[in-house]
Length: 377
Ligand code: FES
Image (cartoon, rainbow, N blue to C red; front, top):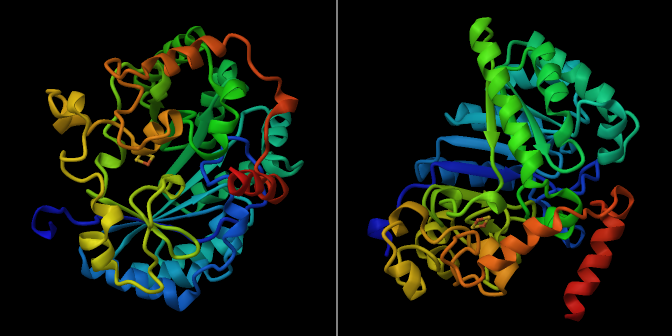
């Protein structure tokens, strides 16, 4: 199979599942708390060496909160020296001026800071930290002062979508180069909290209209800021080509060394290999789990005969699994899927959302409970 497999151009290093915040839409696995054996600094160096030899060029540092790792600066320096373009995906918690300066010196190319909301009270309630907003605000200013190209990321959902104008204003005030207004996708904790997070169609239409008006205003005033508005799958009729196709260009390494074709795949009933005992090239080219959904032989007849199969590859395998119990099904987002009614039901349920206080927050206690539930299934 190896002859027609592409290169793992994009490596995502999930350095840790630890995080000081507890966002209810976190895409980490529900049972993250059971994976405590993080790769060491040297083990990460080895992963970077192998990935680079295989042609990887982009390296994202994420988590959890990657700043929890005190060796982050050393990892960035190592990756930079190997020729990676490096990107830090952070909540900003654990950042300070000396770390920003040290990361700059280590060669970090790019920082993406996530906010929960433009309103400090809403932001801090979602993050589960009284200091979160102030810290993020200060760090965003410093990131700019140290001349990084700055991406601000807002996960947009039921609890903040009606403040999208204030969110964009905040980003303009902070001088963001790029703003990702990513409407919540439903993986990990977000899937559990869907009914409290999925906006209604009317909210979505309004948010997109306001974003377009700001785009015009930004262009008219020659402001350098790109607004990216990501529509959620649940309001699409055709699925996305998730990860640009399974095992095509994305390779995620989880904190404990488990290698995954996407950050959400750990929940699938597949045996994923671990970089601690298997060479990355073997994982990428030859492991059964990475080959499971390559090509089209695995597809149900409906997808096999679909003219879009080379465009969307049958959609997201994780979404198919979460919604139908079988990752071999077409993604139910597809209007042709026999399970598409599940998406329509979720849309209808968004009219009566779960109250904020009933959201399941991402923290070790809730993760342990989720793990017990999963093992008792
Ligand atoms: Fe895993 Fe789409 S998130 S394949």
